[in-house]
Image 1 (cartoon, rainbow, N blue to C red):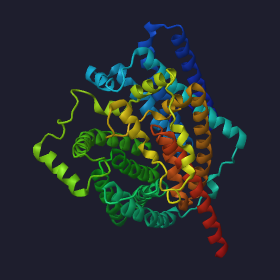
Image 2 (cartoon, one colour):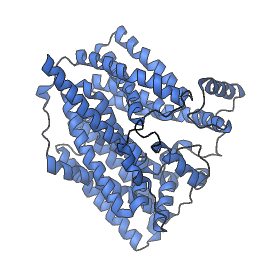
Image 3 (tube, rainbow, N blue to C red):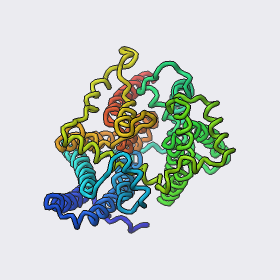
Image 4 (tube, rainbow, N blue to C red):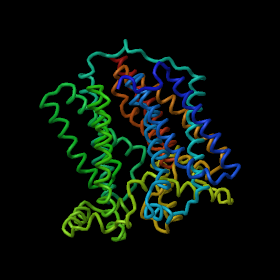
Length: 487
């Protein structure tokens, strides 16, 4: 493991410059083939580009972690990881997936080899300008990195205090707002800017896992399990794959923090992949059963959810009732090619999207203007456009959404902005984690989410989170300074 890093000896800036150079070479070849319409090369390029994207993203993420392990807390590492999945492994489904898989994806939009190449070019351009935005912002601000000598030594004690405050924040929001809304028990929509902090429980789980791995005592392990087991159970009943898997991922990160062994991350990735394959058919079955009741995903009560699970287990058809022939479900979930091709053709035909026009509503609190549009329904609106119903949240990824709203100029603008924000958040996160300032953990989590949610819609999944991040960061900083002055 000591010599796996091909970027060995390079700084962060050089890692990014090397990666940018590779993307420029890939883009040049792809554009040449596309312009000259060399159809004989489409199949080869449509295989090679995603593979290269996956390799470059993986190596970049691992290299950053090897240079400084605290990079695991930054959005740029998570951005690389998510990109390896969605823009690397996902598009390969059209090249190596079986006929039923391709047929299933073509139900949304039939993708030709030419259109597949265009989506691969879109992803390369998006990645390229995210990195360029990161490098340009770095060259402008040149924020000085915090050195390890300022690290607080008693991080175990600080982690205990952080767990306490994370649970004080996260548990009430999760169990008094998020879950009642999820289970159809509220007659109003909780503000997204508030329910975001229900995710504080994930960081509490991670720090408890860190303490269990560091202290290696029964008491620390029991405390971890007392939070881990209920969280896993609740996320399963929500029929939310992401929430379920993130609980395992953050637990793995906690143990990784304790032993600093990359094998822990590898085991976590393997375990998460296996769990995803196991729960996906269950979640698909449950969500389809809820839709047959004439309800949305967030309207079913706990009793109804338990009845659905009981019915499926007793009938023994949970894994097969909604199975689409032999389609490789795990692969179709990672592929946004069909939706990207659809919106790219829509824009080229003059049917421009307007999802970015919602950005002004981010600054309007719902309690001031209750009629504020619900930003999260954009996915349902798009589902209705492509599938004819609203029982789902279909996405196109931020690169595809940018093209739909403004073509290539908008892709370059949005991706550069994303890269610049990733740099600024990364600097903040490194400073706070290196100094073990755990009271910033809610901010750090929001920063991480801007990295891995690249398949979300831009206004709700990135810009809205960004606004909440900086508001919370400023409030936390003010509170900490006031408290220090009062001591």
